[in-house]
Each structure stands twice: as structure tokens, then as C-alpha cells.
Length: 143
Image (cartoon, rainbow, N blue to C red; front, side):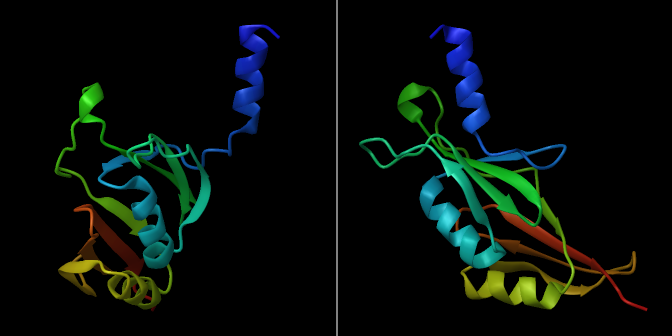
């Protein structure tokens, strides 16, 4: 089997990526984060590379709210040290925001911005997950 055929077979076996832009989060404990996101955000595990001998995982693929989100552990020994999440927010446009909010808080997310009706007319709030990532939830106010 030549290299091209092998690559084509590998590609065919991967789960489909959902969404036009996909966040790829570096966290300390990608498989642990996947479990937290399952509880907090209803994430589904689409696929993952097995952990190495140190328990690190280079790739986890989740489906959250109809989109793909990817995770990977830091590998400082390969030039990828753990970086503190900054200058971005993961946005979840949802329906039934109270259910989403409660599930996330119950799973260990902490409130950054209280859930409230904002000046643009939607219910909105922000939470921080146990890995330092900020997640915003937004739902239009029903008339």
C-alpha cells in the first residue's frame, strides 16, 4: 500500500468536522476536559488519540451544540508549553439557556458575568470552566 492510499484510508476513518471555524483548545488534561465538557455542555466524543505514557493526549474531537471543538494537552518537551487561556471567549448560542447554564454550573463552571438580559436584547452570561476557558451563552429573549 503506498503512502497516499494509507493517508486516504486514515482520513476516511476520521469523524466529520462540524462548523466553519473550529476552536482547538490547549488544556492541562484533554481527556479530563472532555469528561467535564460532556457533563457541563452535553459534549459528545467524536474521537481521540490514545494518551501517551504521561497521560497526555494530542487530539480530542468533541461535538458541542452542533459544532466541533478540538482539545489537546500541552507538550512542553516538544515546544508546546501550557498557555493560560486569554483574549478569546467560546460562544454558545443556545435555546433553553437556563438548562444549559445550570448544567454547566453544576459541573464546576464558575460565573464570570451573571446571566441577564443585555442591552442588545438577548439573555447572556459568561462562565469559566475548570481549565480557565471562558464560555459565553446567548439566547434571544422570546417575545
